[in-house]
Image (cartoon, rainbow, N blue to C red; front, side, top):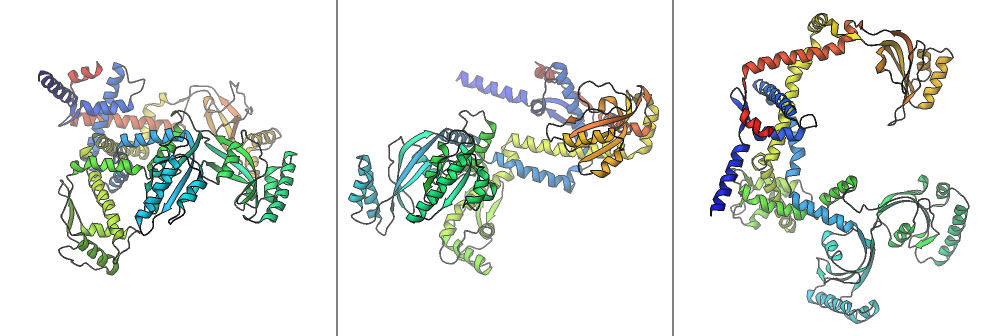
Length: 638
């Protein structure tokens, strides 16, 4: 009992401590928690020291003063800012509308399953009028499989009566190849093991794991297809001769892409040299895939092989193995996207809805569903608002603890936006969609109140809103004002001329060329006496130039350069896009020469903005006196 009491006191102390006010400005205050949330998101190596943290606190105080000024100006009511906030809210809220732990479990499971491929066959018995016959048949198949009977023995024993059993070979499959309910069965089997009968609307299935292999990943191929229909024996023999002839040409040096254009019957790839986009397990015919993944090195060409489509010759272009660890961010991000877009995500969704149900206070009102379906039919088919029994479009379906409710009219709107509905007598689609509508209504109500349920989401929305307001108020009070105040800029320049001096500089023409070869050609033309304007006029699509006075440190050069008048610098190549930049020096100037106002304009604007901002912040500090709680600050510093 004493332990429970002490734990309760300790928790209360932590909550009180974390909720303490760190600083106030006028009648407003900021808690220790809010500040730490911002600091921990933005801290750098420069802010981890005591002085660095104090500097960040000073910046944060100024930030809050500016945001408060924006609120006083009611900038948060601007339609543009409100629209930005709503768009941002819609973008980020989905992250908070799922059970993250459950999603992570599904991602981990998908990763584990991605490590191996399984060769799968299944036995299927269709559902017939008398369902007991189908069950008896699949049970017999199950019994014979467990007794290690061959397929011929199984078919001989089972197919004496209807319904018959059918067998299909899926070849190798991997994660996401099958519906999740089938995938779970298959990945729960050992090699050589068959599962228990599984019931679907169509009938009964038994899956069998034939064998397993380490995941082969994905591969990019080029192919030459010699197409011939199944069953055409003589045409296939002639086609085989042609395929062999082309293969011999290839191994003797013929170009694969050229041969594909000449001989391939694959109309989707032959003009592209036979190139097939990257694919993985269970994408194509299993025979084709077996030959594809048997190629062990890039550039390797297979001998002609036969499938039901004809004969193929394939060439391996590249291969991407499945990572064996979770360190590959690109692979894991793609895996996450596949999980989120796969039907397995419904598991996480269902758990999430179960968790939020009591928070929303969801309550389903008593209702005669047949009457609801009748109202739905009239509204969908005849666009009429009718009353069936006690149900009409104003009837309440669900209520929530924030006094919000969902009415029949909301259900009708949901139906009109859903193309699965089949009104008029057959209400199966209504019965299938109503649970989905119920879930959507619960999530929608929870989403509308996310700030109440998720402190992290509340902080994220507040941060975006304040950041947007800060940008708007800075534009009005500082940035725009400084750019537009020509007289103020000139006055500031005249008062601070000593700040605006040239370092060592020169008049120069800086050329930007589309590539290194174009740059070399342009340099040769300059050396032969052509003017830079002539060079530009001859090749304006590949050469651009700009002339002006530049500080020597601004001129792009290769290594240390001794600048002289008339110098043409070596081209500097941009590794990203291959463009090349070089300069011709016209005239050189010593350092510490005075910049005129136009040459200083960019620097003056920046300094004038800082001047206006400091002056404005000083006014805000008078309007909202700042008081820092040193005791709480010391707790943070420790």
